Image (cartoon, rainbow, N blue to C red; front, side):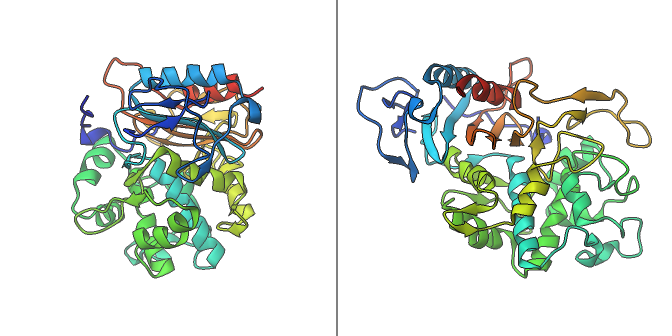
Length: 380
C-alpha cells in the first residue's frame, strides 16, 4: 500500500519489514500478523525488551491499542515503561526507516533551546531582537524567547501565511522574520509556525552553529537518535517547526530524556528546572494545555491549533477542561499533524508512541486521547 501524499497547506498542524516484539513476546511481520512463538530479542534498536506483566502493564490493553493504531493507518506503535520496550508494531515501512513527524519537531526544538540555556548561550527572557536585529526598533522588539516557546508572541498569524506562504518560501526563516507584529507580546495565543521558525536564527546565533549540526552534536548523538535528522529548505535553514524525520523508537528517546528530568544514563543534557518549565506546568494563561512547545494534560482554558479569534486575538468560543480527563494531569506529549504522538506519563514512567498516515477528510483520526486511552487501560 502506498503512503498518501499530504497537501502542503496542512503541514505542521498539531491536533518493518523486519520483525519486532509483540506485547506477548512473539514476532510480527510488516503487517502486524503473528509469525510464530519465537522469543522476543533482548534488545530492539538498543531498547531492552520486557513483557507487559513484568513491568506492571496489561497485555490485553496493549494489544487493543495496537489494533486501534493499525486500523487508523499507523506505520508504527510502541509502548515503553521504565526504559524497557514492552510492545512494538510496524506496518508499511521498515521499523528503522525515518518518516516525517511534522510538529513533533517543535518539542525537539524546545529541547535544543533548553540545551542552549544550560550552556549559558541563551536565556528565556532574552529579547529575540538580540539575535534578530531586523526586529529592533519595531513593535516586535520586546518579544522574548519565552514568548516564542509559549506561542503567545503576538506575531502575525493566518492560515494562508502559516500553512501556505511559510511552507513555500525559499527561506522559511527569512519569511518568518519579515512578518509584522499582530498583538502585544503575551496578550494572545496562537499555534504559530512562523513565530516558532524564528527560533532557528536565535539558536544559530546563540550557539554559533547551524541548528541541524547543533541538534546532531548535542542531542541526537548523545541520546542515540541515529535515525533522526532535520529537514532543511532551499536556503539550507532547518525547519524547526515541522522539519524532522525520525522513527518510533528514536523519538521515544526524547521522552526518556524528559522522564529522566534531563538526564540519561548518568549524562545531563538539559537542566531539571528546564524540564519543569517545559512540560511540568502551563506556559501561558491563554492555554493550560501548552508548555514550551509540548502539549500538556493540565486542566484549565484550552486552545486548539486553529480556533477562531476576535480582533484582539481572543477565542470566540472559549473552552476549558483537559485533553484527556481520564489520564493523569502530569501527562505531556509531542504532537504532529496526522496523529504523530509521543505521549509521556511521568507518574508511571510509561510512554506510548504512534506515527502514521494522516486521516483523510471524513475519516477517524488518531490523537492525544487515543494514546492516553492505551495508557490508562494498560497501567495496573
